[in-house]
Length: 243
Image (cartoon, rainbow, N blue to C red):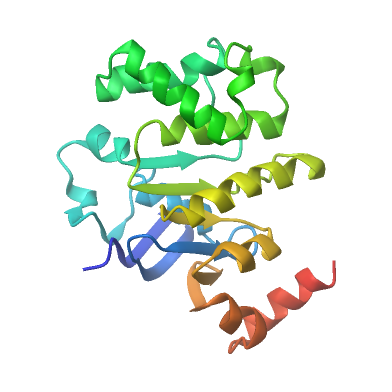
């Protein structure tokens, strides 16, 4: 069985049908990138996987668990890290406590062990020297790297990234993408929504192109970028290459 199995997911907000029967699988250790125009349903799909939105129909199986009927949402979410566009850091805590407090509260880790892990992961994302900094003083790229470290502190089996660079100034984008490339090479299972086409090409095992709430095409980076089968895929990629 696949590590993540999405079957026939439908989701509407009022009269607006955002997801129209989406199905795909992700294997353990695989990096799958979702691309497509804004409004194609990519972020909504991620939010359904993390139970921030409830699909109208369909099924989501993660770690062999029927996610939509789980008895313990918090225990499930503790195994699924998520990084958002807007970082969602705790502004009343310094960098270190952003990474320590969730471990203590959710994983019941003692303070000393939580700090050791936090320092190690902050070092991994190049933010250890900012451990005592007020998060409000950080740049966007620094905040996103702290958000990634905080998610990794929870020992996730799956990481979801929802446009992690879209709120960043162009010069900050590279530092976050480099951290994500390191994570991908470490074997962490990841589902990424991004508009960074060169990054998607470099880091993905498989790319899923969504269009108007459906999966239009999926394949390896070589298949999708160099030999797209769908006219819609070709049109989308041509628009990006023309920028």
